[in-house]
Length: 223
Image (tube, rainbow, N blue to C red; front, side, top):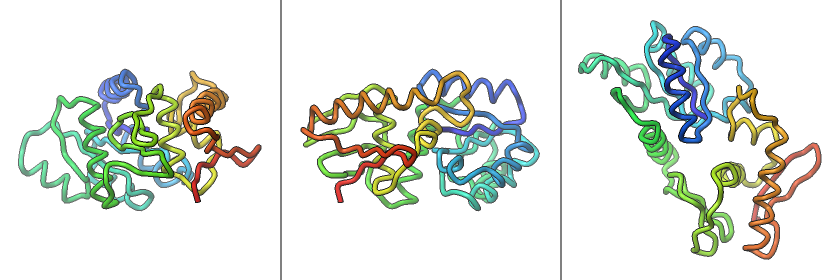
């Protein structure tokens, strides 16, 4: 999920709409509201955020450090002022990157992926058993063959692999795939997506790599 922070309602709505068209869950905050949220939100909610997009607001320069107290997720600032001084001020306050409007959501996601690779010093893919998961939106590979998946199922597989070795709840998966504040989709849709994903994995691998336990959640591991 992408969190957009801007004091202008029109800008927040515009970005969340653009991300939605790309199938990327997002939500918008006023800077003052966001400051309170990032300090008090549950760890599971913070963990569901893939990147923070900071726009205009009197408190914008104070927010990156508050974010860093909770997460290492990329912080990208969108600058309306093409000046060296404003760009340097943004970097000085702790943002990871600065982009200028207009910017496409896919560019933002690509920049966020690049930042995560640098922060974690990892390659652009993660392997678990015969499954290779990419961080740039590509379909996964199984036994070096492309394994096409619908967007929701791909993102669930990515999330399970990112959290390999530990169980994640249906709520955690829903928050990561649909966003924290999507009231238009029922949480139970996750079960349908996972059921379809498990059937495809079973057909490809000959077994089901996703373990589920009632009330405990889902886990994928090859240990």
